[in-house]
Image (cartoon, rainbow, N blue to C red; front, side, top):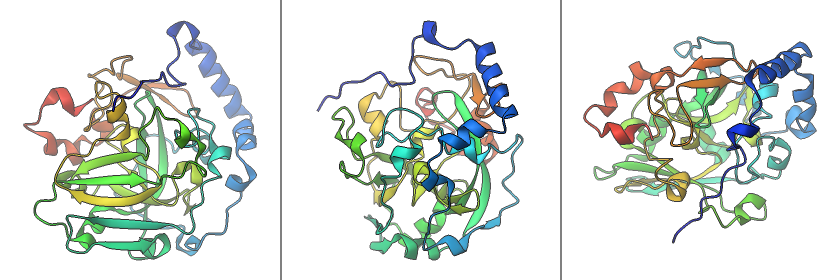
Length: 319
């Protein structure tokens, strides 16, 4: 089936783009106002901590091995600037995302494993010791943020599932509910959202299954109740609101790769020297400050992941 590629809401003409000096001045004004406008935009249900069966697990113990070389992005900024196409193609989807019902919620773990299982989300979360890690996040749209994710390493879940020898990839799938998520009524996208990683990538310590942020359970617009964080890859790889985790022999095709494989490939590793077909990836705009800074290879995580990709097709690694 062929899919029509619709120009996303953020892909505006260069002639319509806000000049950089005006953008940076606007950010300075907001910062001087104590982020008041951003906080006002956040819905009451997102500003106040909602009752959550796992709330007693937060704040999770910090993992000191994961540090940042730039300030943490304020929660008021991160909670009001999100991609969540199930609820719209605009960034200010926090209010719309409150339609997401996170209980009851089950996660199915299956495919080529010795121990297939279906777990209620609260049981799954309590199976693993939670920790907090400070991670970078780099969007393919050339903006970036930093965030304190709480959760557990993906490799811990892999060990629990006990994959078979012929499992080469992990396929993640989110929910499918067009009533709860009106964006899924858009026929352009091959719902539900799917993404994948290799077994070798999942064996690293860096891939993180996220259950919380900012010392509390994960907000809905962040992809509650369970999302993936792959900080060396572009953000579209870090799938939200996971329902299914399958161990498979064939390489999964992600939602964005299915729509436009020449722009959104399987690997999607961050590289400043490989541009997106429609814009440069050499620099990134930091949320909250508006500062334009150089992009780092593998988003600054080359020491942790670079060795995995030796010998692979360099033309595809950074799509």
